[in-house]
Length: 317
Image 1 (tube, rainbow, N blue to C red):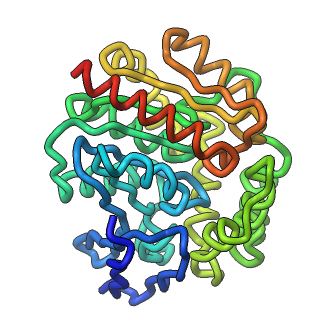
Image 2: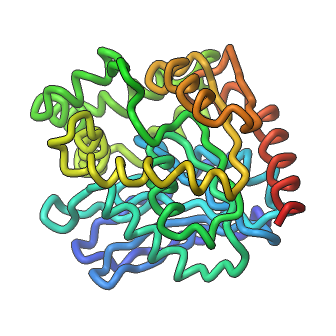
């Protein structure tokens, strides 16, 4: 990585709204953009050389989440890390410009992969909402997949699982939750405050909060929460259920690894055990003292595990 080569590029979005790039010492990467036909731009990182490793963040994080893993993998892998539309440094679509559904996120990812033309199959590394998005893409394009690394994420809701109260208020009471998330930034601030066991450093906290300074920066945050498919009546339920039905076949053909912070208040121990029961042979890194942002709590252990897993998966191809 050339730390001096930081490109701050204005986006030609349809509504002209594009977040300014924050000055973050821990994010020394070149900003790149993919422009959709409607003018909305997806921001992404493309660092390193070698077999491609695609890193998909969740809500409300962004590619800043992957900064340490990118630094660890870039000597051996091409690290691709997009920001989902409306999050991070990607464009801020208006409510009428974009549907903010799981299917729309997968369509965005399909367009990005075609834009990148990475050639070799992709190693998918997924956290939080990056899991449903990446897995939905993977089961639809199995020949483009080299391996799957699932980090505190899910493809289904385990039987008996209940959203924690701090998240349920945003999901169950949608008008109130959207108001709190968008007007007062409570979802982003709450995740930053509760996402780690050790607490975020000042630089990390600044990094996670920086793209969400204005209410218009938080529309996608609220819409991601509203897209949690808790019942069959939800518009994204069947899409996620179809992904989950096809996952067993994909996992039988491609290496799958699990990385879990057991003190995650959302993707908790019950979610991990559901994965473990389903895929008992999958190598797993279990971190009892790590939370939702486990790459902040245990960056070295996560990076070492991922590097070793990807190299083994690469040999098996």
